[in-house]
Length: 247
Ligand SMILES: NC(=O)C1=CN([C@@H]2O[C@H](COP(=O)(O)OP(=O)(O)OC[C@H]3O[C@@H](n4cnc5c(N)ncnc54)[C@H](O)[C@@H]3O)[C@@H](O)[C@H]2O)C=CC1
Ligand SMILES: O=C(O)C1=N[C@H](C(=O)O)C[C@H](O)C1
Image 1 (cartoon, rainbow, N blue to C red):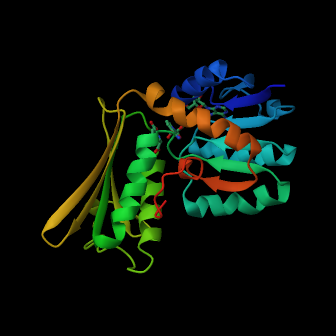
Image 2: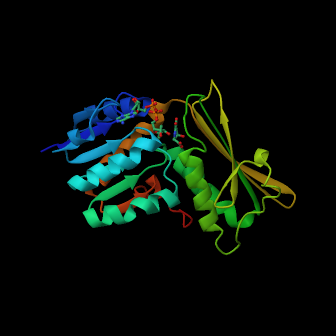
Image 3: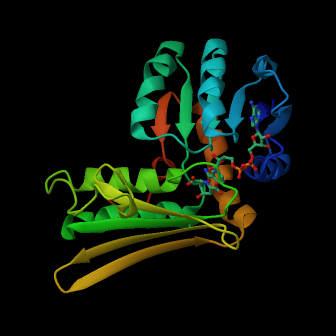
């Protein structure tokens, strides 16, 4: 029997990519398509909710799924560790699984893990991310997650050295790491993690060039994982084995 998916944000850019992946994937079918005109009650009777909507809607999607005992795969951004903490008890009480994937691209996840691996060796770490001008949220979910992983990897060293962060132009700090967001036409999604130390710097760059091709492998891995998950899981690094202790 195939897994009946309710796809929220189905006509958006990410939703369209996810729909194409599901249409080609054995054992999964898009049973309900939800757009901005839909009522969330139409997820009734589905086996899995996949969210590709907006940060504001995403919280309501999780609550609606929890009320009905349905697992959720969240591709929508805006889910910092702090915000995830707000839904953890709801998820646990409902006995469901909610899997947050800040970035479905394998290269992006590997880039963030490499940044975390290098983080204890550099005291100055800043993130510059660029997305198209139509993106409504900043900093990107990927940058937030990267900053959180970097900070966790630096537990023994403490916060990064980020002088003058009281000045707006120094970016928004997440877990002490300054993030600088560019929003401009002509870019899909790009992230540079710049780590600087005595006499040297290391830059880890990830560039999404073709979104459908970049996200499809991660979406294919995340769908069955999310269908069977229990509790809160964050990041594709929990689904693929990167072989890095910092992940
Ligand atoms: N995890 C990942 O790898 C990726 C995550 N994203 C994230 O996914 C989200 C969507 O991104 P895009 O598709 O580029 O945006 P988009 O603007 O193209 O699509 C969002 C869709 O959500 C729909 N929507 C708004 N309110 C709704 C509601 N109440 N119910 C159902 N649908 C509703 C809109 O009509 C729109 O079609 C963003 O948060 C973005 O950051 C985007 C690309 C990759
Ligand atoms: O809005 C986007 O386009 C993307 N959003 C996600 C994010 O906020 O990190 C993932 C990817 O960067 C594309």
